[in-house]
Image (tube, rainbow, N blue to C red; front, side):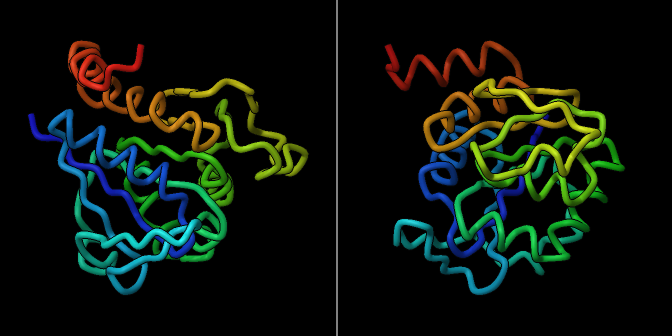
Amino acid sequence: MSVTVLVPLAEGCEELEAVTIIDLLRRAKINVVTASLGPVAVTASRGVHLVADTELDEVIYNDFDMVILPGGLPGATNLNSDPRIHAILKRLYQNGKALAAICAAPLVLANAGLLDGKTATFYPGALNIDDWPNTLFSGDAVVVDDRVLTSRGPGTAMDFALAIIEYLTDAKTRSDVEKGLVRG
């Protein structure tokens, strides 16, 4: 079974989150497509230059098993203000696909109406929980609620990527990738 995910890269994204997610998922043999909102070269939040595989317009109508949104500021704000991102999130979710967001990026899911009735987590201060009364917020590092996965920030990126691997494949694949990381 071939699994393909989309990781949109916006100007100002959190590079540690983006690169960790891309790297670990590729170690798990998951097909990761990175797509920039504009030109393929993106400058991340700490000045690291990332080069996406393609531009979003080239893959916007493709079918993906999951969309994973890296956070960071202003990266999450740039994702949130792009109507193409909201459209692809809604289309894929309505078609039974999964969504994932880390750090400030759960704000994008909330604004798209995709956190209603869900439990989620986010970077402290990135969302005002009073604005989202239909969402239960958790302080956990990673939250998996049905087809929506969220995580808190750069420090949880590795755990988030491993949870995504397990969600998309199986516990053995997650374990194999984690062993190769020599985390302990």
